[in-house]
Length: 64
Image (cartoon, rainbow, N blue to C red; front, top):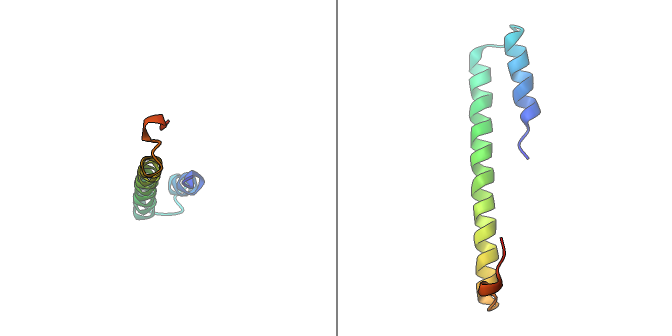
């Protein structure tokens, strides 16, 4: 899963005045990109499962 602890650390550092808003926004962007990548990977995984079931003639028995 995505490293939310790193995001929280950056926010804590920002609130304490140890970093600027650019670092926080960069971390938020990285988190959003990671979540997007995770979603895309899960969609590709499910598509592969469906294709495998179909190629084996088991598409009608496919369960999410």
